[in-house]
Image (cartoon, rainbow, N blue to C red; front, side, top):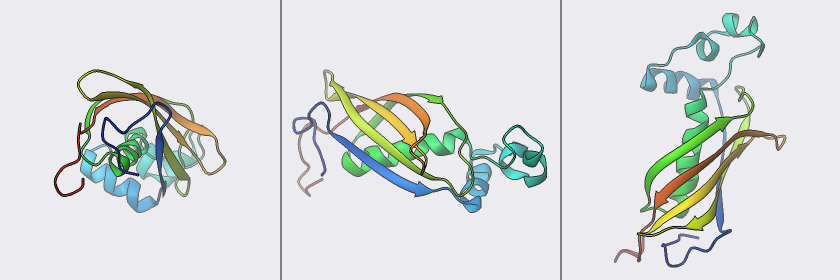
Length: 141
């Protein structure tokens, strides 16, 4: 469902799921400039406490934006707090879940923002503030 501020109720949620690939990590490294060897070097990462390459935390948290804009296509992202709870490995399928915690003034909404891997483990926990459209646009969005 696509929501406007007036339609949204506390507890309403949306989710987005994506499998993280090596290509995703390399493209994110190129776009962000973050070429930490934990993300781009199999040899380096194999010797780390993680034992293999991991995805950027910012790549994982970017999935939250997709979950938000799929349900709230005219939303404006105002803030995001994220706490990384577990590593995301290449091949993990991550589900970003956004849930309305509180409706604030001026069309703003406080959202719980969590990401889980394919085993249901919490890998990211956070909170976002977004501003939603107060009414539907003429084209239905």
